[in-house]
Amino acid sequence: MCGIVGYIGPKNAYPILIKGLKRLEYRGYDSAGIALLNHDLNILKKEGKVSDLENFVIGKNIEGTIGIGHTRWATHGVPCDRNAHPHVSNSRNLAIIHNGIIENYASLKTGLEQRGYRFESDTDTEVLLNLIEDIQKKEKITTEEALRFALNEVVGAYAIVLLDKSDNDKLLAARKGSPLVIGIGKDEFFIASDKTPIIEYTKKVVYLGEQEIAVLGRDGSLEIKTLNNIQKTPYIEQLEMDLEKIEKGGYEYFMLKEIHEQPQVILDSMRGRMNAEKGWIKLGGVSEFATRINNAQRIIITACGTSWHSGLIGEYLIEELARVPVEVEYASEFRYRNPIVTASDVVVAISQSGETADTLAAIEMAKERQALIYGICNVIGSSIARASHAGSYTHAGPEIGVASTKAFSTQITILTLMALQLAKNNGSISESKLRQILYEMETIPTKVKETLNTNDKVEKIARKYKDAKNFLYLGRGINFPVALEGALKLKEISYIHAEGYPAAEMKHGPIALIDENMPVVFIATNLSAHEKIVSNIQEVKARKGKVIAIVIEGDETISKLADDVIEVPEITEILSPLIAIVPLQLLAYHIALMRGCNVDQPRNLAKSVTVE
Ligand code: G6P
Image (cartoon, rainbow, N blue to C red; front, side, top):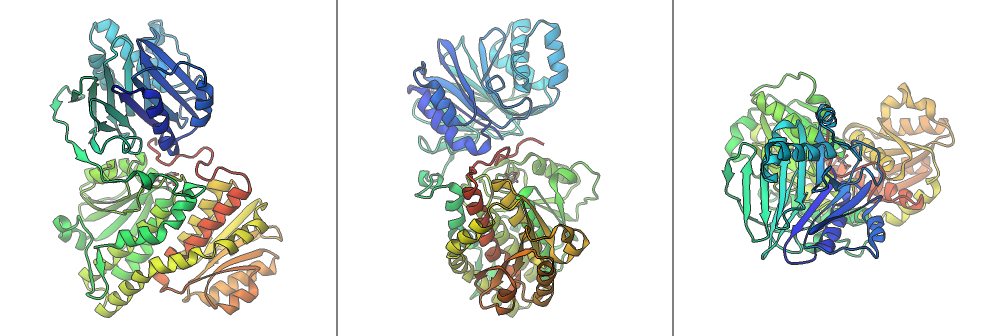
């Protein structure tokens, strides 16, 4: 979380930085700021969004061919101008932007205060900056060396970019735990938390490695060293992403665009990995570890947020099809207890961004215990993808809306393929059943497209319930995690309290909440549990609750009972989450829009959570 961007070269830095910050705003939007170096350090920062910063700088000096920019997701200190980045050192010679958390900042701060340093903000970042300055002064060394010494003293995670007023020709950067990408242009460098601010200018990039420091020179030199002062040769990679993929493409919000991209990205995530006619599945990246994966005694799935929900669906899929025991763990819990993980376990880490700090730490812990790590990530080259032994990319393309939609669908697609591949390898599925499921998978993109046609109906339903204070989402079996995800979507972007529950568990608590003001969304696409779902709907109706049901086309029984019905195409039950989630995403989207919420940038949230 927090987006950082930097530029050094012949052009004016400001427009590049502002555009870059807009692209990174999904990472946090509590405040935004820019530092430009034009022999003098010019700091412009403001609480709020990047657009607030743009208004603030009108009429101000924005000259400078070297600069850094930051969009913040607050950790230490409330969102306000004072806590906005960039921060300047006590001598006003250094400016810094930072993404991450310096865990030992309190003790460092006390030491610095005793040496006379004063702090303008409540941030850990300002402490790191003054530590660099203090070391530089004390040791009489270069800023670069002082940076390296300081980073060896701090505990925590960081991606930082540093400006030194006394050197107009250099940008310094370092990372540990939080990502940084360097773009190499003609006589210019770009640096950012991800590639989206860079792609417009160059496709040549270097991913800065863990615990590495980079010095970007105006003369075109790029020097990379480790924190132990070992010189590294930059490994230049070629980006393949198009600019248009990160623009809104005519949609009002990224979230709506991304919901509508689902037919295509599901297809992309299946492409080249299965063939129904020939009955084969091939998930890349596994061959080297095929034996260990096939012989896994147990699979542990670990993830956060929406990715954790797809993990729960993965549990149903793998246990049902491959008969391998699966446990699903919140990464934040898993990493801090003392779980039993052995060399015979496969740990599957699911992450859209590939940067979620808890998920990354969870796999590092599992790696130490000799488990094989399989990463399911969307962002190519991300930290979790790199830290995994094997893995599959979801190929959903850049997901900008903070509430995850298309990444979720592609994660489920990969998990389905994984379950089928395991089942095929261990003989727990017949050839005919395998083919039948693969054929059905091929129909999913079309069926998701058809489901998107429910949009107008969903919008009408949204209008009816937009003022509700609470929502309950109920599902059974493989659609229980869909209920959780539907509830999460609604609470994330509309701020309505929503809970997901297994439908049968309702009678052990949530039923007490039901009255005429409580909308209850039933995910009723499981044919095997149809009668039971009908009974659950009756229980809600008997208490005057309002029922919104997602049903298979032609389901007259539930249509007669429910207040509102959304019909979706029929599909074999284990694949139904991919269809059922679509109207729930649309429902959350329309309700949030009608309530005047910022759908793409919900309050307090960020897309990439690189802090614990
Ligand atoms: C944040 C995002 C969620 C996401 C979760 C896990 O909370 O707002 O949309 O599901 O992080 O992120 P990951 O990138 O690991 O999937």
